[in-house]
Image 1 (cartoon, rainbow, N blue to C red):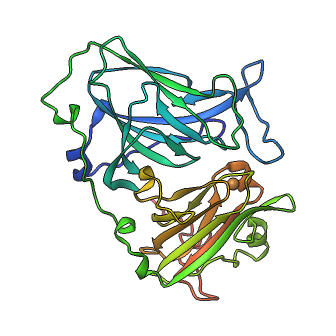
Image 2 (cartoon, rainbow, N blue to C red):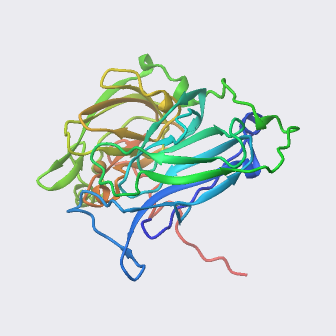
Length: 345
Ligand SMILES: [Cu+2]
């Protein structure tokens, strides 16, 4: 991923087509950072497995790009593809953006924010209204950073938008529409009272190794892939409480299979911009988050890991099972589920 193997594919449906800008006004922004050696090759230093912080910010692979925009609303799909860095994005004008979707799709209600904290692998979709700026104006997307990142002279800058005189097609109502009500989803319709169980998991560095829920991936391998940190039945609803008692690290924790609803962070409501279906949660310094999720559609074993990739690689990854009893054959085992077979002509 550090070498650039990260991209977006976009899913469309009639609901978002009716609500949000489409086509050239629906723009992927994949943000990452890198450090380069004198000969232009990528350099790598993971600071004793704590993380890599580059001094160059890339958007869709280009350093600090500039995009020409019309005087209308644009939809940007922001993915943080940095292997460690987290961002706090804001506009140079201090104007708010409107968040319309999170990792798992549209939020129930759009949210206006003047900045947002964005960890690795999180996705936020935002609307920026350029109609209020005169042509010739430059608006910058900036990074105010967060605790425990390593910042350099220009890591506070991400990209810029130059407002042009290109005529706006006002027959397309999305040019100036900021929708409020968006869409429901399984995760956001869940109620905490439906949960059958609450599980508590700690994320911490233990004897120099990154652990999650008291385990490492090596322990999973050594168990012949039998060790699981949770074993909900199919269609069970659970609360997972993830605790980071360190002031020295943040962890973007990614749970496979499910989308979840963030119930609380340190006992308070989640930030406005994260009130949508999520599959990565920023577990900041000294933060405890409570997540509500339903394990539906698929039985099998799924991973949960930190998305700071040096943390994940050393060795902050575990697995949980869904709908499997002890000793059951995993129907989705990647080795045996779909064995290769020969089809003669
Ligand atoms: Cu981590």
